[in-house]
Length: 301
Image (cartoon, rainbow, N blue to C red):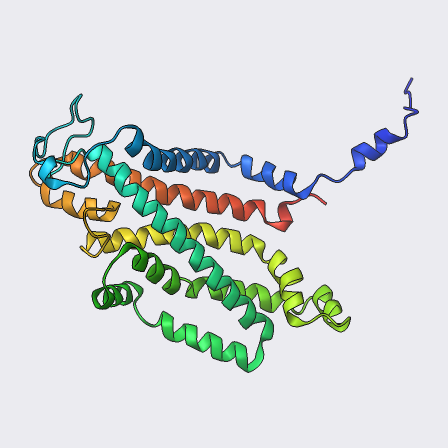
């Protein structure tokens, strides 16, 4: 015999909608690679910023470094050996990572902010304004990006602040086109038109409708922008145009190590290469998971 509960709240609890943030968290947590990537990014970031202070190694004074063996193989004294200047490789990976990650996150932040604002304004205003703004981006995209970076750095120098600015303010063109496509779609939807017909100005519609409904692409593009910034900094470092000494970055370390690997000093290349590749792949996995988490079709109604 089936019994029916007399408590009227049970049915309401079962029918209560699951909060959107909880659904998105569940979707993100279901991606095990993304979880592992988050752990790796957090651990590496903490290591880069904390270990050089908790376990200091000389990374700035070459004269002092000459007191240690050059190109020494991994040992209990130097877990990943030393490089051609006598620097401890493990300590140098974290030392260079501090600059690589700082520049990557700051340049990525600049990229997504500028690209989002530009793309939303262009797509929402439309017409001749959109055409002019997009033709300007087409002109920028016609210039090989790495060649542009090399030219600007050669002319204006390569201080850390300038590297952050130049990568941040020249890497947003593709992002703007992605955000623009969202703005073009959203401005023609019923709720955006209804808001306009009720007297809302364009900036109100952008702030209350276009931006919230573009957050999926914004978050996804933001994570990829950080990975791209780290990649471009490393490319410049590999070409000898990275952060100036005594600071260093992963690309500069790879460039210095390649001149020694033919002598069998593998520890000057492979460890930093693994760390560098894994951070870029991890950020991309996080971006993929965030894109799924913000995908409306995967959310419950």
